[in-house]
Length: 200
Image 1 (tube, rainbow, N blue to C red):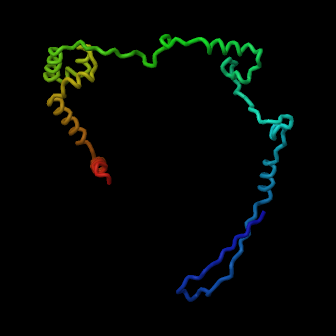
Image 2: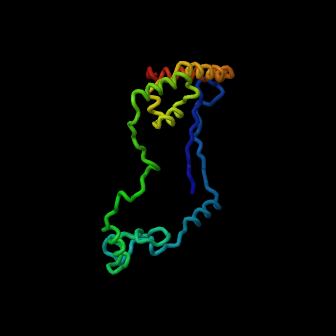
Image 3: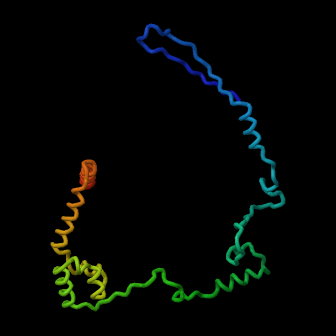
């Protein structure tokens, strides 16, 4: 198998040592005989009866070939079972019986139950405890004490200024250990976030 490619070289203008025109050069690309023989040998497949369409059937049909696995009544569709097969009766019995949805297990491990047991006095006490010492009375501890969710605690009272100040001091302590590269990368990130809002 040979392929010929015509490559023409054109002179660069302004260079006097080059000829005004050149003859087209023909390149010959030839595959080695060993590679050709190996490829032809791999593609030589023995014809099988199942390759083509069957001659005895006059119309198209479906071939059902399930993967090899443990036998089950649900694997073979009813369309492919003979009329006197036992699996057909098993399949119809299970499909006709109505399933009890309440007996099925729940998707969630435990369905959360909503409780409306807290009064105004309880909410005021939650706010006082949270404001007095936010480190001791965290949202989780308050939720455990008053038997409610931490989300309700967050909605009932805001974080105290003391905790915000502690978080700011922790952030400053972390930022003091940053080098020049990390500080520059964080500043670039903030600039990119600002450009998102301006759609740039």
